[in-house]
Image (cartoon, rainbow, N blue to C red; front, top):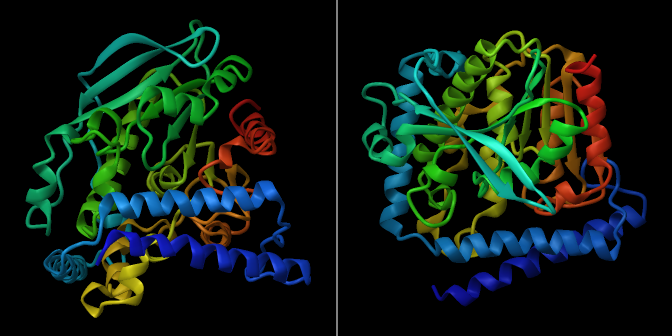
Length: 391
């Protein structure tokens, strides 16, 4: 199938977006409990940017070979059997291993130029020590990623008495210090709110990426790789939280963006004594996100490429934020999401909002890729942090 046929994807998506905008104009919305879309040139531009991002990712990955899809399907079936045999489908938390504390680590001072003056931070690294369960499908392939054996995180902390810490979990394609610190507005969180910050790097991202593009391996149809990525992300973030606790943190919060919201939602179901959890433009239903963003040619033209999403959902159940209950108090849960998001559609945030028992949520008129530029997000996030970590 020639790659140019993938170019039809934004046309179909934009057509659906225009139809949704017209429905909103008529006073209806395809998403119950989500504010209606109010189209504008900026909002339409953000939706087009989201679909262009998806197209670029599809072109980067290309159309998988049918043999690759057959292996992926067989792997998923093996994983479903593995999970069910151990009773983890009924008890997803049982799948997640408890990590040991970080006893040995390296910490070096670094800086980047993200504005008129340099941003100084510390680069934390330590041995991850994560491995999938013995006999788990895909274990050998995952362990073969040598770059994942070392965990990395960027730290911004104040001198003097202990202060609250915010653990910031980044999204797909991020992971480097510049994009992480700027994406979360680190300077304001650190200087204006006075928080200590730590930014763990997701496996296969940033300095852990085996290739030139951060996270590129996530795009291939290897669902076991995604399961292990989520499992190791949770493991590593929990070890970073342990490291933070050892620094005398009086309060700790989690702040995740996109896939980072996915990972932090899982961590919030495993860790006690967290004071807040913020899920930004969250992707929490992996099967739906993957299906919404898969190449158009796979959906429309060849049965060899069709994915059994029911089986994928069963295999990824053990790493689903919607399968576990948060331990963070209800008043410490916060969500913000874009009504025009076309990467993680509004039904993703709505599903998390319902699962978290309808906590505070901020809907903004914007998309996913440029979502953090929306002016209403920072006041919402800062208000959440003042009410929990800085109370």
